[in-house]
Image (cartoon, rainbow, N blue to C red):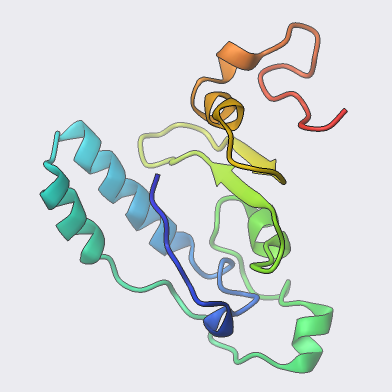
Length: 141
């Protein structure tokens, strides 16, 4: 798991919409580290060498914060994250690294980070319930 912290005071509502290239570079870096069996030190250096997250070309405004930034082109593979993420809410968004050619698979979670969640994310067949919405059953019934 790779984490990127952004202080809330520096967060821009369109931050994710323009960060697709950054996430692709992160995915390629992580995939390269696994496929080329890098040492933890090599991976750390590669991650520290990533450019900072992209910033939107527009400044924040009270009006745009209300009506939204949907008119900006979204470079992120999962557009819902760019449109819905709020750093003040308790929802986590998980999606696949597509740098290895794997198709986009996504999951949104509003709860504690549990062993069941990690099993669902990393071994979805283990928690699949036949006839119950396939590999990704709803979190709340």
